[in-house]
Length: 252
Image 1 (cartoon, helix red, strand yellow):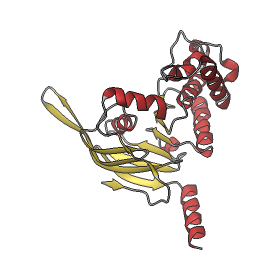
Image 2 (cartoon, one colour):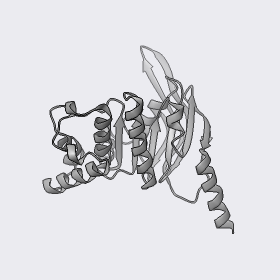
Image 3 (tube, helix red, strand yellow):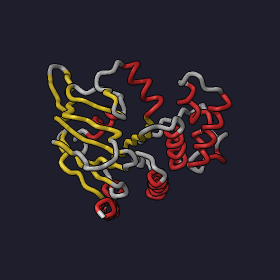
Image 4 (cartoon, helix red, strand yellow):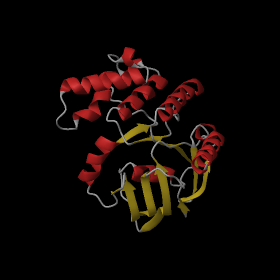
């Protein structure tokens, strides 16, 4: 099933008839079934659906943590469908930011050191540049004052803000978030969602997996999956109004 947005912008992500099949003990499971999708630069996309519908598998493919069994994946107009593991790792470290449900911060590193970590894998960057960049993104997520603390000294919401800073530090083309509020209470979840709202207003491209429909409605575009297929693609009300206004201006 195809979900191609009509837009004048160049698609940042384009997948064409992508399928993913897992083989375990001679049992074949099709996690994704011939999905086609485009995500434009600057979009905030929420991906929802029941457990086991394939949304986390799709996010893993978009994040180059895995490769499709069939189909094509273009990231920034580059075919990344059949890259080696090392090639995928190189693109992940420079072009993709990840935010996970469980934060995945390293407990014996400070907040600043955790955020610096992705840049240490890139060659040619000085320690001074890496440290200053990490401080910059920590200020962006309002965690600069906790840079010398350890993860255990932070609340869940604060840890997730640090995780978002780590995702931002390499200036990624897209931020992929897998249930980013799943381990948070309602107050901290709202704080993190407000941060994503601000990142979107600042021009970030975000794809967020969530089972929470209220969280999904914060995005500009909502996708719903069922049994490995995309079954719904809709814009939120404000995005619909903005799209109509843009068309009227272009025509008019």
